[in-house]
Length: 494
Image (cartoon, rainbow, N blue to C red; front, side, top):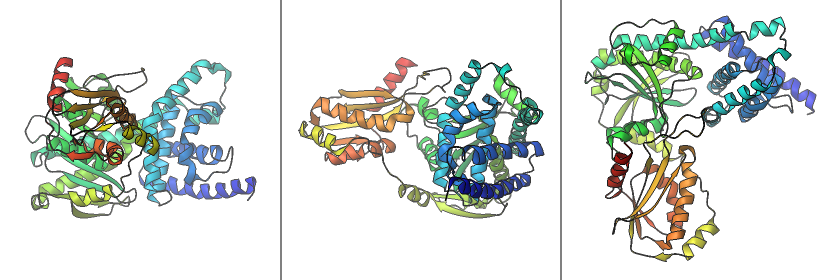
């Protein structure tokens, strides 16, 4: 098929997609201006950009979002700005979530896009700001149609829609005060059927100290909850470094900072009273807590609407939770159409599905492993190996979210000697730790008989190395020496 025919075929398919996408947003009761802007943004991406260099179907567009927002959109449109980049992120995320719900793209593709946005959005924003600072804005004169489409008022209205829907749900949930009948061990789940996304929720405030709700995303978030519940840390200061969740706290207005107050004002939702002002933070392991992004608010609002129904259900029918076995969790399977099915699953059932999908990237080739192994002497030594996040945040540049360096530490149990330690960025710790462990073994010129480890993720990371060298990994609930070293380290930095 030649280029022109491919474009024509794509355009016909895209017209149907855009119509269905528009109808889905009408069902969400978004304003006409907001819907128009989302449709325009997606239309530009799937009809103009994806067909610019070669004819590319909308289903394959996720792979090209980085090129679009880091280059093409900035150079080819006269309205590119930090605000318009953020709005395009919102529109594309909404569009591809719609496509996943329709079965047109896989969850793996959607998850890839979410990670891409998380990892790259700061770069896109800094790039467009640098580009616009170099350009003379007076060189461009927009016609009336473009001026109407992309004026600041419309951009502000789109943001206000997201803020209003989110904080409206936050307020209504706070009014219910679910902490009066639920506590932080009453975890329940929500499975979004069309997108195959999982959320796990617990209510805090049963002790009467701090009120709110925690939303753990996916099984990785649930694992962070279990780690806290089981006390899987050596120092209380580590608790927030392993948390992977969105946390909504209701507190005194005086405890909120200026950004929190500004977000609430922008929403137009009124909050009054003692301990009723919401403070929302997104926690990710290895990073300082951050504000929730505008493009995540609509999704979170939909989720909180389901949460409200479920906490009321548990108030009226407490046996739904109390009759569960200790290893069971109550889950609602919800669809976009508003239908749902309530079920219960064991933690084992949840994590079995994840373990079947686990694949550990190997960054070291077989020849390198064999070379190091041959150069080392086998011993009866037993090592401890652990990884954790340092407590002092680092920020490499002003556009970057401050992060806590990931640290790996190796100790000889027989003499307590530190064999090696290394700091790296949270996003690259898998590859960096593999390479460091091999480098450490190569420099020590010895192979231990056993290595005691507690960190499940680190075990998966170094397993290819130790398996190849026939070094036994011994999983432990608690290590002997490293916890004391960590506490001394944290105390010296505290």
